[in-house]
Structure formats: C-alpha cells, structure tokens
Image (tube, rainbow, N blue to C red):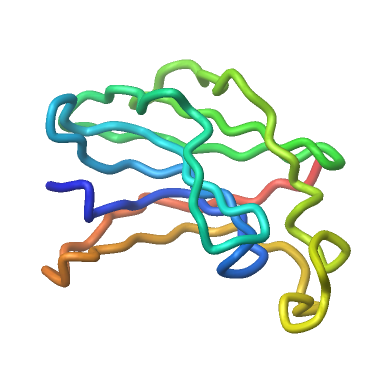
Length: 136
C-alpha cells in the first residue's frame, strides 16, 4: 500500500551486507519491483535507475541465481517467462572476507530467504506461495 511496505527475496550476510529484491509501492507507478543493497555500510543503494512497474494484482515470482561470485536477480509475472534484471551484483561481498572483519565478521556465511517489512507498523502481511532452494 505504500513505500513503507516491502516483501521479497533477500540474499543476506548481515545488516550491513545484503541484497534485497522486493515488491513495494510507488506513489506514481503503483506496485513496483526494486532492488535495495547495502555493501558494507549502513547506507542503502538502489542499483536500478527506477523501479519496474508491476500489475496491481497477481502473483509475482522472484529468483536469485548465484554462480561463484555473481548474483543475478530475475522475476516473472504469474506463470510467465523469467525476466532477468540487466545487471550482475557481487555476491562475494556477502562473506567474512569482505570488509574490515571485527564485529562485522559473523562467521555464519550468506543466507537466502524471504522477508517482509511494514515500517508503518500496520501489521500488513505478505503472502508467499513457496520458497525453493536448488543447488547448481
């Protein structure tokens, strides 16, 4: 319902190192897909010049492909074909070796998962049909 509501797929190391492919709301475009990233800082970056417009209703599938240090996000509307985003992200940043070590070196490794936020504290849910992990 607003830019304060987000849900999607996250590749996560810690609060300072993660990539988040998410569905949210834009005042002028309506429901959109965007990527938020944090590369070893508390400052968020948005690698796309503008979010991708989505239909206001219906299922959106999200995918993250990791091959060595390359992360590629894709999405599909309903049962349609996968559409790969036109950039590659550096997945190697989601590790103990990237950064200054110390308190940021958690020794846990990278995670992938689903998440949602309601920063307006309206307790709005996000519905996920499934989550699947396939090792290549």
